[in-house]
Image 1: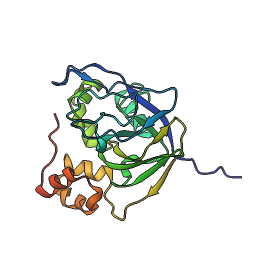
Image 2 (image 1 turned 90 degrees about the vertical axis):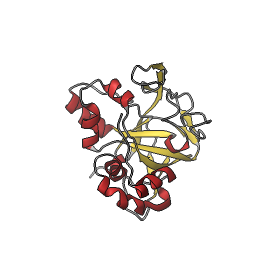
Image 3 (image 1 turned 180 degrees about the vertical axis):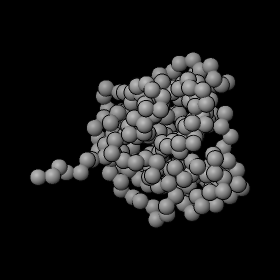
Image 4 (image 1 turned 30 degrees about the vertical axis):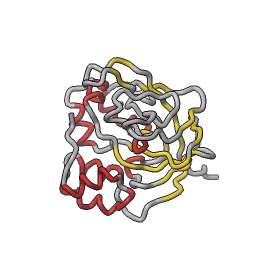
Length: 228
């Protein structure tokens, strides 16, 4: 008798602790995320300018000008991709090592579409807004020469998500895709367009309103992100 298909799930829920940040003007960072031992409630944090920062209660964000807010309420990264980077870096990468809030298993985060919705557990529903763009804090945290270029070339950035319906999340919760947009604009495609392949910018506009307004304006004007 064959085994049932492996269920996509949250492998680990990770929350950050403030620590000094020598890599940029923001004095602290919350990139040091560790697995939570109990359920964590997730809600929309509000704007970057005057909101609560992270979507996860108990999580912290140091650079509130660049990170957090409703469009970046949750950051998700696949355990399968962390396993790839363990081979590249030659060291263990526990869940949370890339500063992700949710370490997933069994779902290809980077091939997910912008605007795709995930139901996690019984209540929480999230919607993919875009890829993580690496910054100087991430480069310092990993501590490998040329890390930003290495990470960017690989184009497996993980995804930011906004909160559609709040709720708790725990390690082991199943992930169900509840909505798949009609377009084919994926997390990886948007990342490639905004970093190394600007010729792809017109194609990501096919996502329409699923692409956040700031990114729609940048793409229409042919602008990319500058990696710091």
